[in-house]
Length: 318
Image (cartoon, rainbow, N blue to C red; front, side, top):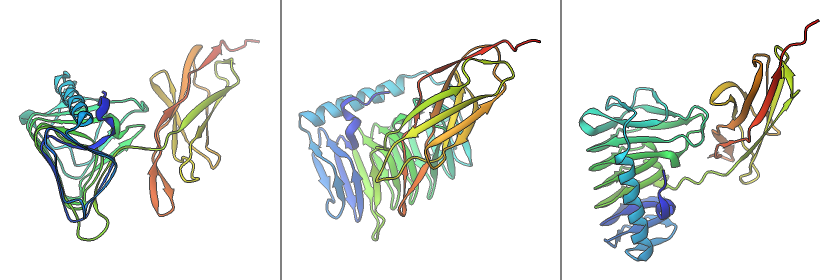
């Protein structure tokens, strides 16, 4: 779903944004109709600040439209309120009895090899995450495609790691030492950032993963039933001289038929003898994952190749 002009905003509030101690906002801040920004410094904003100007008003209008879009989606499933405990959730629209989502432990969001997969969580009342809770992304899931629609307020626990975009009607509170990869938007009230007294700071970071491109070839093509077919995927991308690492999935239509790790040249190879007679629309999907850059990690963006139509002919007979 689209945030429109609000896409560049990492923190938005209808009333005020307040910060204590050490906090870091990486991305734009928008305030409308309020204009109050408190606690900077010692907090730091690495981006523009829009205070109830024309740009802020447009951004707020687009965020409200995105909230209404998310709230108006028909749920694909109703799930328990406790999202932690090692749960894995696939793409869809989810609500919960009572309207309050709680996260303790680790929640894994699995895009199943679709970089465009969308996750929407509809909390009629609240979203609360516990101390040191965590959200992991797998198989192409992206922060930009995760929406937490909250009918009242959200609170992110101390030292927690949170991924996705919070669209809350009222407040958003980020506790000490939390790391947010996504957006915190309090449409009618206040975003409160509780900072640390020593580094690292509490931080909210706009998703901006380095782009990648994936290409795919096959050989032989056409092939025959039972004959080995080799698919070679090449993933390109660069961040400070470092190239993408980790996994490529190979798909026949929407079905994953295999996977392989990238080598040092950014190439992943998969061979199969299982293709049946006919034409198979094969794609390769780079599903990203952390890549070491010095003493830090960078998450390259997922990417999908163009379709290679693999033609499989009937096996030759003597």
